[in-house]
Image (cartoon, rainbow, N blue to C red; front, side):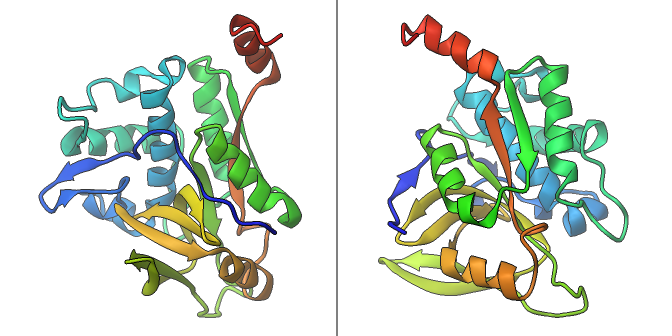
Length: 242
């Protein structure tokens, strides 16, 4: 498989915190203990929807009003309030369990239908199509919600390595399992991701091996956001394509 470089069209979300500028959101900032422990799915969904709202006027909603500061960064207090609303209205956390991945597309679709946004979300793309779907989504300027599933059986302790990039070299930085991240780019066979408000990288081959050997593609997969055909045809017609 040829590994091309592909990334979002606009700079990714940046939140102004006491520690400086982030790369996406983090559940670690939240005042709720439940969010700090299990909130990565809420952050991932919230960030995907927020990026869409900030870069596509038709996807902007009242939940996102006033989040952007004059300097182009997000206001931290307002961002946390935004996450609370996403959790309360669309994506509740199950105590002791967190958020099953298949809850996410249902929550996104409720959001899209409520605001009459011409997009839909679906879960569980076949293993052979995963990389291509991620690449296509980024090419359409849509970040990708990625699940790093739990171990199967669940009592295993195997984890996937997250890397940081330094002068073109990928260095181990963290290990995760049963975690959600947002993919913002592809390069050199690595996924560029946002997790805990930081920029990390995942080796695609290591992700495939983890899903096959220690988890399952039923839970290690993506939530794919796509335009409804009627909406897509309307946009192309307006642009003179059809």
